Each structure stands twice: as structure tokens, then as C-alpha cells.
Amino acid sequence: MKFRHLVLLAVPVLLSLSCTHKLKDGEYNLTILSTNDVHGTWFDSTYVDGHLRRSLFAMNYYIDSVRTADGFDNVLLLDAGDCLQGDNAPYYFNYIDTLSPHLFPRLLEYMRYDAVAMGNHDIETGHPVYDRVAAELQKAGSPFLAGNAIRNDNGQTYFPLYKLVKKAGLRIAVLGYNNANIAAWLNEDLWSGMHFVSIADIIQRDVDLVRAKEHPDVVVAAMHSACGQGDGTILEAEALDVFNHVQGVDWVVCGHDHRPYVETRDTMALLNSGSHSRYVAHGKMHLLVQDGQIKEKSFQTDLIPVKAEKADPAMRAHFRKDFEAVKAFTLQEVGILNAELHTREAYKGMCHYMNLIHTLGLTRVPAEISIAAPLTYNGHVNSGTLLYNDLFTIYPFENQLYVVNMTGEELQKYLEVSYDKWINTIAKADDHILKIQKRDDPRTQQAGWSFVNRAYNFDSAAGINYTVDVTKPFGSRIQITSMADGSAFDPQRSYKVAMTSYRASGGGGLLQEAGIENTDERIVSRHPELRNILYDYLMENGSIDPEIIGQPSVIGTWKFVPEKIAQPALEADMALLFKK
Image (cartoon, rainbow, N blue to C red):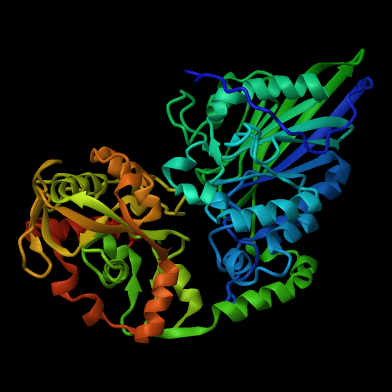
């Protein structure tokens, strides 16, 4: 792999222990448990129907079981990030109740985590949230670690690089890192005062520094970075790069890709528990020490499946008041929905769900065109009274809305790139029109068939009229006929285009693939988070009506053509994806 240039940084130390240390001869057995990408699945039941789900409560049952079997002092418990986003509970304690002690540090203190590596979605919450949580986690004894988040003013790490822990009679150094690709997804306002460097650039230096200074017996690299290919080519996926090339690391604990995966080698092991409390990653390490030196080392790894019904009743009772507060917030009525919303309908063409998202974008002055993708893979909201809880299904992320300058020609290229992620060129109705493959997708928990690419990058447009010819190759599929109001569409004119802050910051790579760089210089205006815009829309209008959000003169029209080929092919592929 290609390791990029090393960056010399000042490294603060947290909870440093004495450096005078020599292991006694004998055998040592260390157990490591890890979680990652929990995405707010803290409580064991949903807020509306009480449906049981996998949760931190359920994971705690398994964690306590392992501690009972192996001994509390022999078990190291870590998390690899993306803790503060993804569910009603973190939203409530991030932005609504900002005066009470944040729930997440209290949960981790209860479960007695040893350390947490930060994730990109933790940074997405913004300074007021993660600075507050980091301070509370440090007091709770399970600090946020991110040794590659570097302060702009003095070159030191913004968060601690490592924590020293003593377990199983061993000195353990846990080094933590955030995803190095944050600048490609999040606006700089969210991470002002710092920047993120490649883990591969600095980790060998960090490991050598910590080993020389602290003389640990075991080193763990906990990183919110996907496994990747191990070839150094993917900045957001550096776990296997580290696993393949870095010396002096015993354990790699990783996340981000939502891929449950474990691996053992002669000298080290890797743990990735997947996401959403589905598994606890479990590892064991055996050491034989002779003459004060480690002579033998062996590893075992596996994944412990989590069952929702195993939720710890004592933990549930302990945090009952917090659950009730979140439930009361999310059950408040916010308006009326006059049509069912199915997010998966977005994969076939125009639908009520995408019409709503586009309408929200077009309400922001000075937007003329909207581009957006379905962000809930297979969500459903019933018609009738809308609860605040439903807004998390409609829009699950805390993305802001930006308005960006793009020429008509750039927009057309952009749509070519987007649809090329989404569809194949076909000649007949029994060809696969959607880019799908026969494989399970652990990220979406889709079994059987799944999309080759991520559906949250399937952007369509509103404010214009256009067709997508499925018989044409990439580069010639999109035909824009006019603006939504019937006026001419001009490829040379500059248009003001609404898109999420994630997309405007380069998330998904669509802008770059379309040849659009330096989006910061193109931003015309910034607006609140999409869920807040949706809430404001409901407060102003009282309801979501298909006739209003679907007005062709406002949002325009688009469809796959020729319909006699496209429609049967779409129905067949949707049946494979969703088994209907």
C-alpha cells in the first residue's frame, strides 16, 4: 500500500499510567468486546407501537454475560463510533433537551465502556453537541478518541489520541481515530478549528510513540473507518490498510461500513460488529509470558448475535424516565398526511415521497431546481395524523439544505452520473433495468437481491421536465425538455439548485464525477436541516397533500422511457428486491 507523508503532531495523553512495568511470568487471557455504528438504537422498543428491537439494552445482557463468565477485570469494552445520530433518542438529547446531562455518556457509564472512537456522524451533530458529550464522556471514564482530528491553531489533536487501561493484568493502550474522509461529506462549520488526516499517514508513528512512552503489553487501534480493500486507495476505508501493514498493533476495532466482520491472524485480529446493535464483536487473546517477555500469542474472534428480547430489565428500569421523555416528544402530533408514503417507490420514478422532499427544497428562496435522493431505504408512513416520530422516517439525517449555483449543462451531466449509479442500459423488458445483484446487503438488512450502489446516491431532479432513456448508454440518457413552468431550459445559464449539505460537501462523489469542484464557492445560501424545514412546512400548511406537493408546474415531471420496456423491467426488479 502507499502510505502518504507522515504529519508531525503534538499528542495529548489521557489517563496515563506509570511507565515502569514488567509482566510476571505466566498465562494471560484478555477478552475484547466491541460495538460500532449503533446509530441511536439505545432503547429496546420503538416509541409508537412498542415493537421490540435490538438495542444497547439487549447488548448489555450479552456484555454482562461475558463479564460474568470471564471476569469483569478481564474484559475490555470499546465502541468504534457513530453513536450520536440515527434515532429519536440522540436527536432529543442533542437538540431538544440540552440542559440535562446527555443520555449517551450516562448509558456508556452504566455499561462501563472503556473508550469510544468518534465517528463521522458524531461530528455531524456539530460542536455544541459533541464538545458537550466529549466532556461528559471523559468524566464518565470512557473518552471520545480521535487522534487524527488535528487542531488548526497548534497542531495538537482536538480529542485525545489514546487511553491506557489495565485489564487481565495487562497494560492496554487503546488508540482511537475518526474517519479521515469527513471533509468530503460534512460542511466545515461542523468541524471548524480542526482538520482530519489519513489514519494510514500517522498510525505507525502514533503506535511507536505510545509504545515507547507507555510500554503497553497490548495495543488496540479503534477506528471509525471501513474495512476497505487493504490497498490504500479508499480514504474512508483504512481498517484493512492498518491490519495489513502497521506493526505493533494487536487488535483493530473498526466500523463505518455496517459490515459484520471478524478476522484472526498469527499476530493480530480484527473486530467489526456491523451496525444497529445487531451483533457484539467478541475476541479473545491468550499470552504466554516467560522471563518477562511475551513468548506466545494467539487470538479467537466471533460475532455474538443480539436478540431484542434479551434486553436487560434493570437497565430498562434505570433509564425509564429518559425513554418516556423521548417518547412524549416523538408522539406529538405535527399535521396530517393525505397519502401514504413509500420511500422505495422512488426507485421506479416520481412518487409522493420524493415529491415532498423536492417541494421542501424548492420552498427555499432562491432555489429554482431541486436534486435529492431517497434517504430511507424502505420506509413507509401511513396516511392520517402525522407524529413527530414519522418525520424521522421521512428524513432520518440531520442534513442542512444548501442552494448551489450550477449551469444547465452541469446539471445534465450530474443527472447522467446519478442515473448511471441507478440503472443499466437495456434493450428489452426482461433485462435488469436496476443495477442490482444477487447478494445480501448487511447495511440495509436486505436479503436476496440488493442494489450494487447505495440508494441514497440516486438523485432525481425537480423544477424541470426530463426523461431518462433506458436504451441509451451513459452520457446520452437524460433529455431535459423545459423548466417545470414550461419556460426554456438553457444549458449555458446558471441555475440555483437545492441540495443537501452532504451532497454539496461532496458526499457520494456525484458532483466530482460530474466535473464540479470547489462547491464552497458556489453556495448561494444555507438553510436549516431538512427535518426542521419539513416541520415548519407542516406548521404552516397543516397537511401534506399529493396535489400540492406534486404540482407539475412547480416540481416538473420525469420518467423512464420508453415506457413499454422500462415499466415491466422496473416491476420485475422491484419484485426481486422487495419480494412482491
